[in-house]
Structure formats: structure tokens, C-alpha cells
Length: 256
Length: 83
Image 1: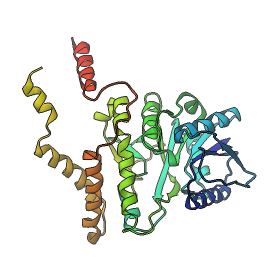
Image 2 (image 1 turned 135 degrees about the vertical axis):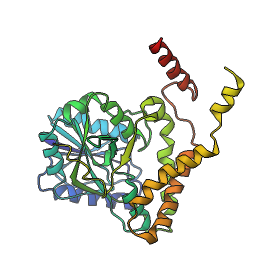
Image 3 (image 1 turned 120 degrees about the vertical axis):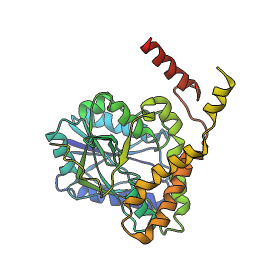
Image 4 (image 1 turned 90 degrees about the horizontal axis):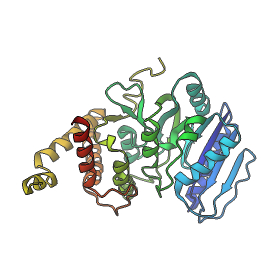
């Protein structure tokens, strides 16, 4: 039994179009999710979702993506979900994403899993993110047998891990809360990597030139959480990792 | 704690910066298969590196530890463990 949790903060028509596109890819899964939770984090834009396979939860107060995901986790656990998956409103899932992620968790001892993330756009900035592995998982070096960290846009956990390790709601934005979760989770369990679970993320760059400001803002946002994350996890000072891209995604068969 | 130690702890040498920069750029440049894209992509990587290294953000700490206190806590813990 699998559940998908999508936190969202819809502030423009573009965000709403992205969410609808994400849900269309959810509806198109070869193995459907038993539950799909769209947790609206008090969005400024009024909208409704007339989709019978979606539970649309609207929070009255904005609390950040960590809070929204935890609300989804709580609901999914109440409904008896065994595998909890997470993505974002600006993502598009490949047709067999759920099938791949679920079978990986079923057939392995990993408590969590990450999939392969690609850029949706075709600008130079999108190509950069693909090579850089900006929103891809990070191999734990030197062995590359497990992930050091997996961004929450392409992530899944077994129910017991989600129950034990919820997101830290003190992270106010979508930056650092997934690093923090992965580092806490790895104190007890391992995070696997499933290269067959493909997902595309739309960074929203219309062109390389016009998207440059957005590109800068993205890294500034990620940097904003680093002080908090480093303070909570001193292990960051000596752990070594390598971001995943097409060239190293099959480094090892970690299920073996 | 001596003043010399304090001075050294706060200052990063130019060589360290270069080392760190090259350590990030070399493996990234090797990922670029199209030669004509090496320069623009390494430039973008340099921007990312610069942001992570120098961009200052409003402090949003919640673990209740002030910046350099953390390293003293670790040092103390290690000293206690090996005593």
C-alpha cells in the first residue's frame, strides 16, 4: 500500500499549472497510488482540485513544506500506508515511478529510497542542474552503496521510518529540511537509490538569460539553511559525498 | 587561548581557497562531455561555489549554539573521550 504526499504553496497560475501537470502524471501511473495527499500550505491563490483520487488538505496557517509533509505523513499512516512517497508540485513522474520505488522498498532492506531526477526544461541552466546533480541524490563515498542524502522531491520511506523520523518543522522553507531528515534517518537506517524511478523537475527557467536570476536565488535559498544544518549535524564536516548524474548513476547495484 | 591561534582560526589562506575551488571544479568539468560547454558550465559552477562560500544569510539557528562555540564543544568532547 503506497501513499504519495505533495506539499504545495500555490502563488501563481504557473504553480497551479505545474500542480495539475504533476497530478496528471500521478493519474497516469502504471501502478496507482492507494492514497494521494496534496497538502496546501495556506496558498495565497484560491483554487480547487476536482480529482477523485486526490485528498486535498488545506492548512489554515502557512507552516512550511516540512509541516505540510508531516500532515500528509500523519494521514497516510492513519490509513495504513506501508510506503510513503514524496514529490513536489513542480515535478513530473515517469509512468512507472511508483512501481519502481515500491518494488525497491519491498525487495530491499533500505528504509528509504531516492529516484533519479532530471531537469524538465531545455536551457543551459537546466543542463547545468542535470550535470551538477543539484536535485539528485548524493552517493555516500567511498563505496557508493547507499545515499548520503536524497532531496525530498523524489523520495520515499517505509512507514516505520516515517513514523520515527518526521520532518523538522522548524525549517521554514524548502531548504535544508530534507538534508536534516536524511542525516537523522541515516543514524539508524540506510537510504537506497533506485535509478529506474525517473522524475523530471521544472525549475521554471524560460531561457538561460531570463532564468539567471532565478538560478542565483535558488542557491542563495539553499545556502540560507546551511548554518542550521551544520549546527545540527557536525558529521557534515567530515562526511564525503558525490552528486548523482547520468555518468555515475549505475556505479553499483546497491540491491545486490 | 593565544591570540595567534585566534587569528589563524579566523583566516583562510589563499591557498586553501584555491584548493577548495579546484577540488570542486575539476570533477565537475570532467562531467561535461561537450567541449564548447565546459567554460559556461564551469562559470555557473563557480557562481554556485561562490554563493556557498561567501553569501551571507540572516542567521536562523535553532540548535541554540553560537557559531564558533560548536568547534569548542567538539574539541572538548574529543579531549574528554581520549583522556
